[in-house]
Image (tube, rainbow, N blue to C red; front, top):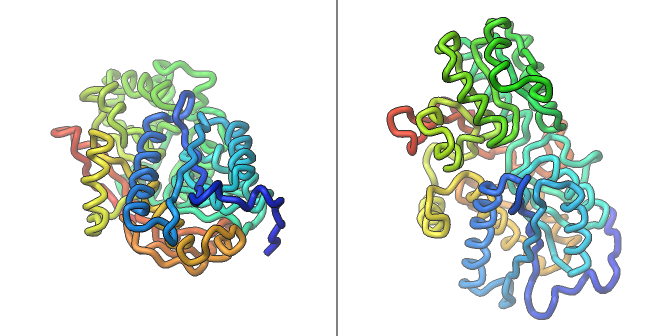
Length: 370
């Protein structure tokens, strides 16, 4: 691999601490709630690492930077953190932002363990510097498409907004559904008001509507409009990107929040480690931890294991991705190369399709597993 020798100042770890840079959306228009959960997982794991001796006796320090769902902010943060001497980068939730960060990390020769973003093309070219915990979009969204087809939905409308992420998701759905006799109908929400969506759904005889749009706007208004239209009483609303995972979804929509299937990256049962971490995360968050919080925790677990073996050397850290074998909260984490994926990938990441139970919206029902 290209070692890209760094200037002396980028090799320092800032005194005795071993520094990891954390990229997290903490302000709007970023998905703040997701960022809060991601950071809670990262910080919990860092605290536990330090409580058990740190990295060869040196404390692990998290340098947090808010990306606000802005690729330019993420790129600037990677530059800054590299100058500050971080041994690795971690985090990020938004796929388009993670792609910008991954490209810059690759260019600078800084290892980046991406926690949550799923976009397949996380970098333009194959790289040795970047690894990812979340399953690639093509894998997770194909599982979601299988769920829809299995439920008899073959006329699937997608309410979408201009975005590389939404366009990629639409393509995955179409390429998987069409050969199996299904149809994907695109509704451009840059041209349609939420109430106008209902007429389009009726005209196209859609049996399912997927929300490939931002949260809360316009996702919440679309759900309200559809749920109040008696012509669409049998229509399934889905949200593969996971909007219903977080508490604000239920708070904003009330009874309308339930029975909207989404993708969640958790196993059917957490390991003993996962159960312990769940309790600790609940105390930090004061509500149920999302899968994003576990992804944050597992990110630090992997990095700490690598750093204990190789110290703060960036090159040796990146070279370690294929040798990782660590027990995380959601299973044993190992990285490999997957066809069409440019980064080191945890291929066995769990995938579920779940929804909020209409009887008890605070409880999730597992509808399908991948």
